[in-house]
Length: 432
Image (cartoon, rainbow, N blue to C red; front, side, top):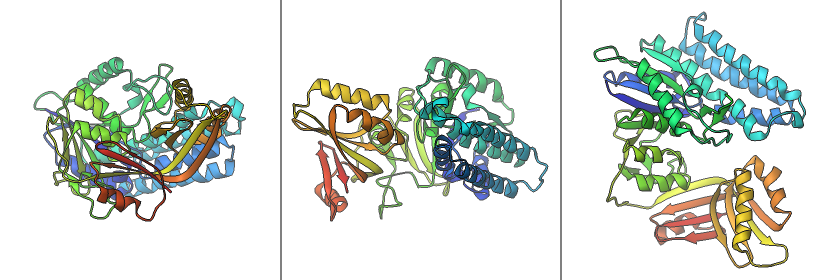
């Protein structure tokens, strides 16, 4: 029986009705064993990041408020899904929230007694996926689907690069194959569903790690690659891969087909529909990626394949908000040389600051990066020791693939352009 890997994002399970819809979609594939990778529900990751900030600032009042808001949100969904209040899902979810509460009680410790930000991020924010998988797995069983919950941390092994962990591929693939092959039925047996958390893994010390923001897509790719499936499907709230985010771009159009190469470019530049790390393992194993709508599961969606020839019918727009434009220049007005750039990138790498666009002149070097707590708190302070630093916050970065001048004018009209960069097929605009 063929294995399909499905990944469902937080928007698909942000309510009891959403969870029921996911179960209904699985029922459309009775002839397939399914590995279901799940993200945290709704805006849970954002709420846990807020919880982390209060934890690190030792703001107990705000921390408790966010904690109970999160707990109420999840239990409200459970109460709608399970009429029997003695159902084991209540106790299991309560146990997980108690574990989170126990971890947060360390909040009285001084900053010097706690671990650094990235470590604490992974230990706290990872609870979102655990909450979601407990609820969804129990609902699938309740609905008559043969389902079992697996702990991703026991299969996806990583190094200790917290918040952006690197996968230990040999150990991970072997473990996934062993666990999944022993679970799924042999021929002529009833199909099964394996529910697994996206986004998380574990390091050699057993600490929880995360694979980067929106890393559940990557988790699905890791599982598909390890199991050598024919395809992996990411279920989104859009019809497929669009040429722009329909939330801000009127008349956005769907791309029926996409090449791996183009998908990698789009993901690298920040297209939220596909995680940047997702494509490589799929391309290596020649696995088709499908992006489909959980709102319209019978629609064809978008297929991403290894295409030798592929032409784009229209420009593709990518928008990144909360950007910071940083301009660096030596204090003695000397030239920006290779050794300066090497030093700057070492500092950025140390603080895990990813550069979205860069541009240099004789005596200055400008970069556009995502706003990040580590940026102002640590990174800029280090850069200011040797460089004059100027920066603008609350900017937007627009990337237009396969652009023409009309497309640029459409985005830039009436706005101040702080940085513009063009190549043959791509233009970047940093706008106030």
